[in-house]
Structure formats: structure tokens, C-alpha cells
Length: 487
Ligand SMILES: [Zn+2]
Image 1 (tube, rainbow, N blue to C red):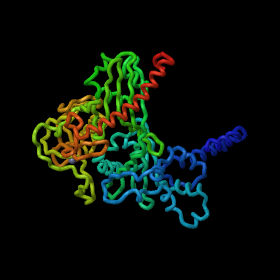
Image 2 (spheres, rainbow, N blue to C red):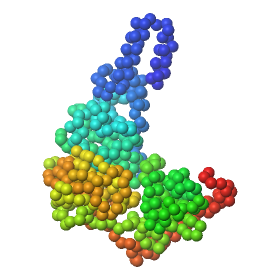
Image 3 (cartoon, rainbow, N blue to C red):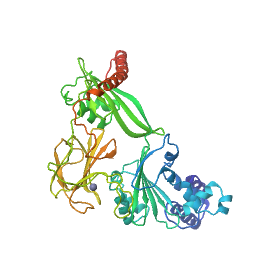
Image 4 (tube, protein in one colour):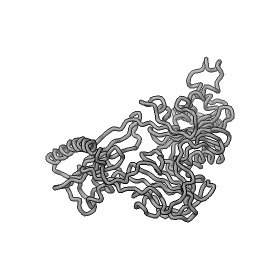
């Protein structure tokens, strides 16, 4: 819209004296500056500057609060009840209008006033953005940023900003201080950092379960399994998981042959018809000429072969080899010593002298090695799709992101980095993305489906096999039709 108006002026450029042209350019510059300068106190300009500034933002993700099929699950560090208190974007705009003005203005005019004192900023994360550069961009000081990072210590959601994430900043209409910052991770997951007093923020995690849709990914192998699986639409992480689950039975480098077929039953999460990027593999079948290799996800979160034998290697309970005292337990209702508000402790603390070896409690892949002002030097390990562990305040980390680790492997030395009162290891266990008590959680220690659940497991296997049979029949049919690889 802006461009079209500029275009009109450009038509008459040739007939205008240079002086006027300069004036025109200056005016245009003012208009543009007003549109992009966040806290500009200039008079309301014209409607089209507004249009520019609003189209420069990504589409509002606000809708997710209202259009959810079911009430979202929320997890937060405060003791207030949530969703109904989520702020309405429009409310901010309206509070700075008096009634008389409101009565006579059109919707565009409301936006102009909002632009005059901008209270809300939406920032789409680009490659290379850091929290620090974004705070500079919206002109909010580092002190506030550190207050938010302190609130994020138990969640660590701000440590992995990715392109596609959105940050929304909402300022208080009176004090113009930051009231809250919202991190939009995907349609199924948002985190709100809300001010509780002039020094502290709390986090509120909004989780929409949405719908999981089932699909079959099937393919025939030509070249490597990896290449064939990518071509069929599996992600790198999914292929890694398949390799891990079937790797004890079959050597993916030597025993795979051209013409072998695979079928994967996969669930993908959608919230309001938007794919969240979250998937879960329900069943795997790799079909060779004379035998099939299978894996089935059971309701306990573990994978078994068709006989009910576990394909997930057992975990150990403790991330260290000595009997260290637990200095602070997992406690989702812990009270914050300063604010007196609920501030969850999402892990177990072990009192360990700096320099004590820390070990991974299971086989997995290192997904994070970070340094956080409050969590200190920490790492995260993904164990299949169900389990994840975190080890905080480390003195030294001996593995890198992307490394595969084994159960019991030393991953570094404990320490006292970040905000601590003394040296200790803060250890977290997450099951399906939720932190649980690492000392009591149900971890795969058994090697097969318990006998009393075997009938139920077999029923599930039959269901999944019949789903995959359909894909296999189609693959055969396709092969008869075209008899040509890779299309
Ligand atoms: Zn802790």
C-alpha cells in the first residue's frame, strides 16, 4: 500500500523542481522512520505508514488462544490460574483511547493511536538472532533480559531460539515497562514470561495437545537406507531413531539390500491445522526377502519387537557413580525464596564436589551444550523420542552436540557454574517433553513387556501390522506397475 502511494508521487517527479523533490523525500523519510522507529513520539502520521508497520510483522499468532479445540494444558511458575487471564492484544490498544474518541473512530484510527505509543512488538526469529540483539532491537535493557533468563532457568526455552519462533513484547501502558514477553515456539507450545514485581518474572507454559494424525511412510531401498528414507519423507532424527531401534538386530551398512522395503507408522501433531513439527514413530517394519525386523511403541513409551522384547536399552537411575546426598528434590510446587511465589524445581540436586565425574543415565544423542547465566554450563541428551535428560552447573563438558553417548559414559565434571549457592549437579529427566521426578519416574529398566500387559501389547501389534500391510500391498502394486526405482 505504501509503495502504491509512493508510485503516484513518482509519476510527477519529472515536473517537480529539485527543491520540492528533496522536500518530498524528506517527508517520505519521516513517514518511514515513524513506521519503523519503535518508540517514536511523533504525531500520528497517515494510515499507510501503519499498514507498512503491521505488514512487516508476521501474521498474529494470537488466534491460538481462542481457537483451541480443547483447553490448553498449562504449566507455570506462579500460583495464578491461567488462560482466562491471558492478555488480549486489542485491550492494550483500547486503554489508550478515551471513550469519545473510541465512539467516533474507525478501526484504522485505533491502530494509529496504537502506533503512536507502541506497546506491543512482535519479532520473528531469524538465523543468527540472539536474545541480546532482539532486546536491543525493541529497546529493552539487559537487566530485564537477565530477569527473564532467571525465570527461564527451570525451562531453558530461550536457549534455543530457532527461525520460525516468535517473540512478542508487551509493555505496560502507564509505566512503559515490559509487562510480559511471549515466546511462540510452535502452534502447540508457547511460554509467557510475566512480570511479578520490579525484579522478577515468572514463566507460564501454554501447551496445546491438538490432534495427532497418523500416516504411513513407506519406501523401497535403493542405495543406502538413509537416502531412501529421506526420499520417503523421514527426518534425520527419525532415521537415527530407526537405526538405533533396529541396530541391534540388523547392520544398516552391510545387511541392507536393494529392493528391501520399509513401512513406518508415524503420528504428527497438528494444532489448529498447523503442523507443529512434533512427530512420534508408532511402528517400524523393515522387510527383507526372507525376514522382517519390527519395532512397536507401547503405551509405556518404550519400543518392543513383535515378541514384546525391549528394543530400548535400560537406563540407570543415577547420573553419578557414588552415593551423593540429594540436596534439593524435584518439586513442581517449590516456593521461591525471594518472591514467595511458586517456582518449580524441575530436577534433583546432588551435593557433589566440583570435578566429580557425571555420567549419562542412558544411550542417547547430545542435543545441547550451552552456557547459561543461571543454569551455568549444561548439556542435554535425547534418549530416543520419549526421554531427555539435562545436567546443569557443570564445571566441564566432555561431549559435543551431535555426539552419541552410551549409558554410563562420562559426559563431564560437575561444578558450580551459573547461579548456585554451592557446587552441585542439577539433574533433570523429561518424559515426552515434561519434567518428571528423576528419582521416582518410571524408567525402562525391564527387558520385556510385563506378562500381564502382553495381551494388550499383542492387540496393539496386530493393529499396527495391519496398517503397515496396506502400505506394503501398495508398494507391491506400484512395483508391478512401474518396476523402476526411485520414483
Ligand atoms: Zn536444582
